[in-house]
Length: 238
Ligand SMILES: NC(=O)c1ccc[n+]([C@@H]2O[C@H](COP(=O)([O-])OP(=O)(O)OC[C@H]3O[C@@H](n4cnc5c(N)ncnc54)[C@H](OP(=O)(O)O)[C@@H]3O)[C@@H](O)[C@H]2O)c1
Image 1: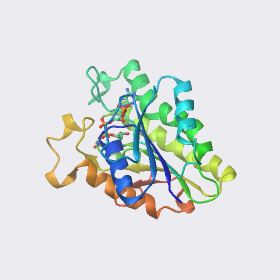
Image 2: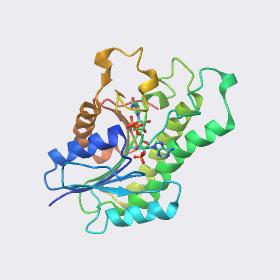
Image 3: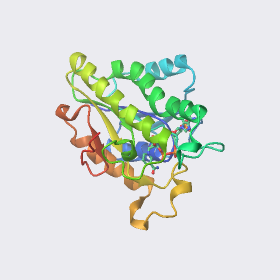
Image 4: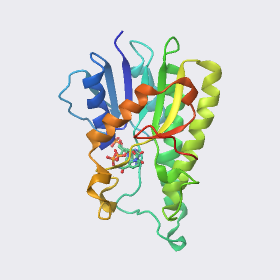
């Protein structure tokens, strides 16, 4: 049966995931939801517009994605670390309520609201997956450097949302797996200002990260639901 895949977020990793899945899941229907229209060379990938700030638009996206069949795989690839006005905090005096609100709205609340409408659309008769891109820096036990208060906290909170979703989903859909994934440090707009000190072999191209993440996704079983895995399939502790 041809797979039905929805990717929310058409940034560097979201796009690369769509392209990787299109080449590995032959004939899959892949809808990529983004604020902008994206041109893909593979005709099985369809670019769809979404407005993340409007819950009705997220409802419509979930309905569109599931119009022909239940969804086998949802990947939430949205997230923000900085923008024109915001850079991650290096010290306490750089904290601001506005930064926290913005970073949490994108990194924590948005994936939760996406889950609200996309999780019920998952396939129940066979294995189905809801995965979000989190970040290793959201691991509390792994935090050795400090800094990046809002981003770290927003991803730690996202990991908690994933655990909650996994618990609730296990009661309703025995075939569904809900996980958080760390893509590695990937060459994208999000990482651009922080690439200077990263060794060349530690900075992945989006295509490499996507290939690794798809391998991890393909190995997931229901016992892995609620957990957090890196691009090598190693579990990251909260
Ligand atoms: N790159 C890394 O080194 C790295 C490391 C660890 C974790 N991650 C995580 O991987 C995910 C994807 O990152 P990326 O490297 O692909 O970044 P990217 O190329 O900058 O893409 C950012 C994505 O987030 C969405 N986005 C950006 N600003 C937004 C806003 N204000 N409101 C809602 N959505 C917004 C974009 O949506 P549109 O498609 O609509 O533009 C796009 O899909 C993020 O969750 C990030 O935290 C990345």
